[in-house]
View 1: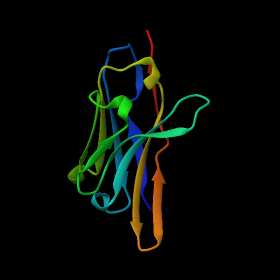
View 2 (view 1 turned 135 degrees about the horizontal axis):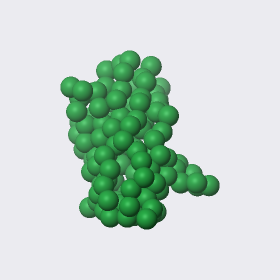
View 3 (view 1 turned 120 degrees about the vertical axis):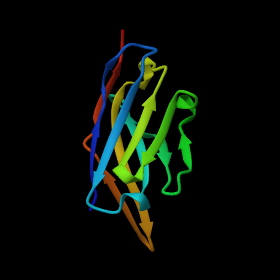
View 4 (view 1 turned 135 degrees about the vertical axis):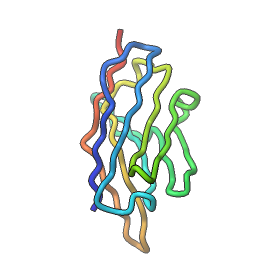
Length: 119
């Protein structure tokens, strides 16, 4: 079992920045691929950024150049640095931990943190 707790959301003006943090507990953090998902009102939850256990990253095309995902395995924490925020970045951001062992897929979610980009 992995418990995930997000923080860092809030209200920010367009062009502003936020840094989201997700602290994991309960298992070996470093073996998990970690991701940030976003769910806008009335829409599905979409993957925004992912960082593999080995450190490789991938980001949604619309956030490339603005968002950065990173992890600190010593602190069991994954971060999402969000710069040049736009109103369309608004949504609830969820942290996800995922790994596959044999034929079993393990997937854990945090409770989410609200990000609102508005003037």
